[in-house]
Length: 469
Image (cartoon, rainbow, N blue to C red; front, side):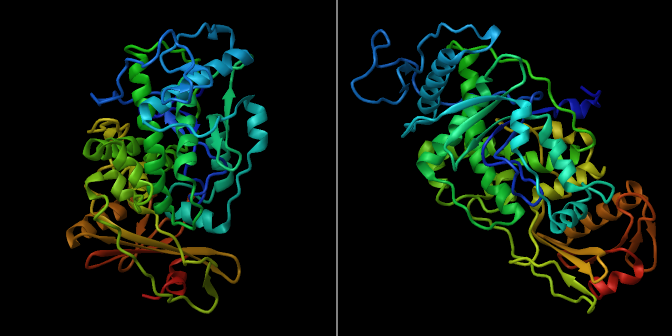
């Protein structure tokens, strides 16, 4: 594994889950979910189900019971030797007991069994395909996270390639776990996490609707937060009064310069468990269940759970002021919203947020800290990509803030990062030019009241062609 600086070492990941990392434009190539192998949050004292089982000698009940699945009780000991991998019968026993434990913790009964397959990494990766469009390329360039020297497809292939530990496929209602050893092994956290996703699918379904990137991150905050929160509770029991199969070692993953992409993708898995924890403290699992019918609509609500459900993002519109030889990339609705989480990743990855700020989680069940004064005043945004007749690209990025002060603070920080991190040179008016490198373009950064607008084009002369001032 490549040597990484301290902050990267704290963010090394394995992948396990459903809901998906927000991929090229928020849609993952697989239902895979990153979780960190370091800086693991320590669960706070949380009320959980009683540990005294209503059974004698682990006999099977006459009918299905919460905390019993496929012949196994949640607290039943297993004769399993995981040191040499798990054979078929051992794996079946571990899956059954883990299902019983997940439903015991979550308070929901599995409606049907969930097949679990274990495959090697090469087999898994051969099934996965990453597709990125020109829209995706412009979007991630606008976030200053994937420059013109790399393709979004290659970045996400690398991002997923060495790190996927498993996934749940709603269409097939089955779990696939990736084993890095010569003999099949199953990580108990990965399995518990995936089983929560199966439980969600059985009880709440998977709604397939067109969402902006920010809306997808918000919905993932609930979905992954639920799974991550139960995973935390599960591990807490393993450290106290449950007998648990030891976790296999993981080789970790080299992020290869993709830390900003990782931070942008990981926010639902960091803040989601804390979001669900707050819901549960306020109204028990009933409140968490009810949230599936009224999910968060912006990553802002997951980063700041006190804003859910009453404070929604403002809708931002961008008038088309392009010249005849420039046009918006076809998309309905026009453009997308990236949200506070993605904007934080932009500022963090480009030096506008102190590196170790991310490692100060500040609340129970939260892995990293996405709350920062430069971005916390966000209330809405829109990115609209443009393409010229000869194939060049640009974009208009408009961000709305709660106050003019918030807008001014962001504009100052954004101009500074362009100069200090990207080598931009000041030109007349509000124009900066990055003369070389993966973000070599012209930028016009203006503030009007509570709004900051960034116009990007290949040259200073084409700025007005993309969006007339």
